Image (cartoon, rainbow, N blue to C red; front, side):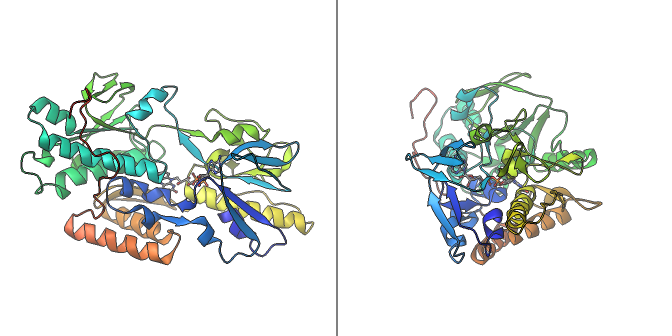
Length: 407
Ligand SMILES: Cc1cc2nc3c(=O)[nH]c(=O)nc-3n(C[C@H](O)[C@H](O)[C@H](O)COP(=O)(O)OP(=O)(O)OC[C@H]3O[C@@H](n4cnc5c(N)ncnc54)[C@H](O)[C@@H]3O)c2cc1C
């Protein structure tokens, strides 16, 4: 979106192809997964965003092939589109490190569909427990395992703890939701490994204060619909959520450049793919080095990359040299739960309530339209005051299935 918008008044024709019709603000996806927000609060039609940009058209479709030699991309319906410049920003998907069978039992969080599936599973677990007569079954229903202690795993575990320990406490008659166990598994010796160590420690303390059972140095070795196997023994749990790994879109391997261990395409200092000045890769799909360090896979890296590529294309059109890309880190913030967050802004290290306010302010500001900002601000303030979560709908198959198939 940043690249397309950056070319708004250039003498070019822009075609935006996406397999979804909406732009998604992923940082607030965990709020949809934990019933705090509705999907439409954080997603906006791409066609509507570009409606007033006369040189842009939008096509709903999946790119299945890219041929750098003939400068064409192929869509899923067999259509080919030729290009003078190609900007690839297809992002990443979950990686289960070769154990793709785990995905059915532990969905990840990347799309609206993922978030609705996580929401369905979390809310159904409480319903199943309410109907159960067996204390062992009930405890497995009320045990939630989140795999991966990065920002997504931390915020998801914190939000599930809030649902169990605050939101639902008075609504069930048989079970006591506050007896739920929320476990966060992390393979290394700290959560939020990309943050300064002092903030990781604060995040760990805040998670534990929220009631999350954080287990460090524990690796998952198997997942099915009744348990999570780990290097520290099995956990009887019916709900697992995967937040442990990403791999680049398969489009990265079609661009003719080199790729790194996560499958991301390596790009030069102008963000073009090695050996082809007409193809750019930006955002999570690209391995970008700026000022001697790797640019993290975060929204500001993707947005700045998009704006840079638009400037590079404009420079080509006016016969000017392209500039190098320099990433500006404006800060990093990770939310943990109610009144808890950690982060850095410049040299400042923030934690607790101030970091949490900063996190919400930044994320509301970056939402794409005014309506979403207003709705999210209201929902957030409402849930802060009332502890309620306004989007507690169970959609899709509702029957509280047992692993054996009985209900
Ligand atoms: C749960 C979660 C929380 C996050 N929290 C934060 C945060 O707090 N702060 C932060 O800065 N960053 C956060 N991020 C990271 C941030 O969202 C990403 O860095 C950013 O979205 C990357 O943008 P992108 O354009 O590279 O990829 P994406 O935003 O993933 O966009 C990729 C687009 O490509 C489309 N696409 C993919 N393949 C194809 C294909 N073959 N054909 C057609 N279209 C295709 C997809 O539909 C999608 O619209 C979070 C990410 C997640 C998943």
